[in-house]
Image 1 (cartoon, rainbow, N blue to C red):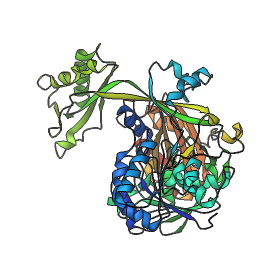
Image 2: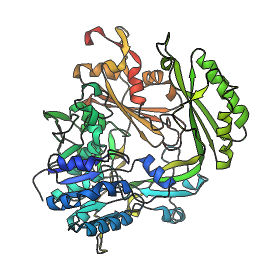
Image 3: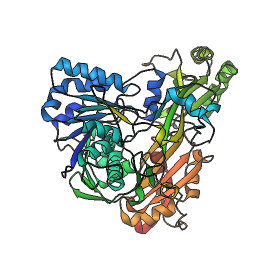
Image 4: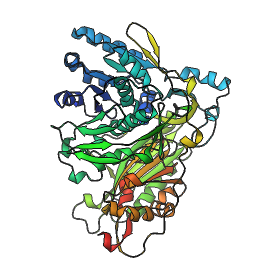
Length: 581
């Protein structure tokens, strides 16, 4: 057991994050472990559509630094294994051999359950959809990927066996931090409190610059925002942590930047993980230095008895084109476009969506202030049905609304692409192995908790409705006094809204009642709105069930994964008492 805090630095929050991240991390402050997260739900959907195995982007990032990593003794942990962690591990071993350095590569497997779906069905596991309750067999399409979310103890076992680089498939994002912390401190699966603390730290740093000022409502106060640095989690033996960053890099770490990530992509006060259940409503933050935020205490309880499984299938094809119209009469022009496209495509496509974005300025100072983009999208079960789409759009230049045009600097869309849908389900946790596979083929099964969480320990519940909001004061945007962060969980959008000033907390909670939220977000009129309060964070958290359809990879919203819902909410006008201004 190591009493010193383990320093875990992030170098990736998604596939496509800054390519130079490993270069920057190695040039920055010392770390014991470098962790990279690549597998968002939409990333898995894209990998599934391409029938692609592992994330070669990571391999290219790592290749120039193998000698440095070996020299410094830094451990590398990443889920870049995607659908083929064994394949990535083998490719890395060849890279290590070619570089002539001494590094051992292991991988973690067990998450890929695609080949076992028929077995599960035969054994009575219906894998009901988490939102609709429908059994998987009723989906009507053939899954092309099915991966369970694994915990961190497979990673810990690989590190205990002296692996230098550990690649995984679908583990939870926080497992990439919890696993190394469990290895470093010698935790067992029954150390739920420390594990909960490490999971919380992992949740904060898993998305890279999300914790250092990226995608932050207060971005105008962030120094070096042009290139925010990557975060570091210092996880202590008791699970408490300090979130910081490389001192040489841009960005900042404050209670607010950490809060932003804490309320991101959660479903409520219980943050369920294969290693522990985190009671997020117990989490407290404190600024303990420049770019240093302490997280403690964090209450943890046993993990849930079920494992979440992400199933993907191709449900058809899609195609889209961005068009533009210029005021006046924008609404009438959009209506004409919709009617003309329907006349040509109705009966051929399954769905046609025509969405204008924004409004034209009054008395515009430039042509672009008078211009409104229009996203046109069509879907169909077969690609042939969408072949009419480019011709239908292209036929309107001389017979459509006045001023019809597309981006002259962009090529017109010619061919459709696969449409991938997402099916979240549960399986009994004991059915999903978590196995570390070493370079010599040795297989190490991850240990498991001695008991599972009870329903009471897992219950998300809903917070009581607050007292009625004040009706006197000044009308102004909610964002005048608040920050927000929005994310996605399958077809559900989640939004966390909080106030930096403790004096504003009672106003916020009363202002954002469930009925008020429905009034502020008319797009959520058909959604089940689940509201939670986090007094320690001065935050109201909301889950908008079904706002994103069945998932980010398949819905027709322009903001497919709901990243702007929080900022949209902040733009809404509410009543603010004069004494708070």
